[in-house]
Image (tube, rainbow, N blue to C red; front, side):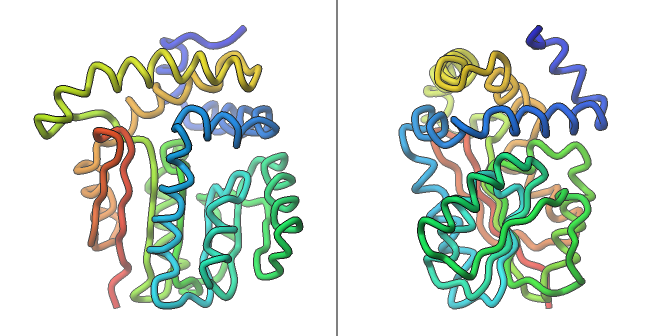
Length: 251
């Protein structure tokens, strides 16, 4: 039986249960993951990942770590933009199958994909120029541990760039006007589209609940600062329902 909203809310109080649920869910939806993303964001997820990759590569990057890489779109975009080496990490093996297939089709030899947990990165200290994560941190039960791992593997001056769904907290007149429509799309349309396109009864019911249990853009900036980062830019997309943060590990 698919979990209802109350049981999903309860799951956020149980990190172990939530981690297992997320791993199984993403493994099950892997075959239709890209299709559902394109449809429910009207293709905007491609543009957002492009912006993240541009910020990650910057004027050059010897190594980018893409955590929660999923089907590999962001890691591959970083490679295409000129990163010398990219490592994509995810703990859902079927997602990595998709990512490796895409890499092979695009003949990209500087991207490696491997299984790993965001809270236990199999990497030495101070090795990466950038750490990226697209729609991943919202799904990590031990968020502080994941951020501390990101901080650990980054070189001094390294960049952390995250893209994620935000807890809707309208701060402008336009956002307040658009909020009811945004909530309806996120809470009703997205789960329905996800169910129809993926055949998975509850995966996309989890998405709006995970956003409600996450942070607003300002709150997430504060969370990054608590974990040692200096926040340099914050972007909000689609009336504040999606946020992007650029932060650095100071020299």
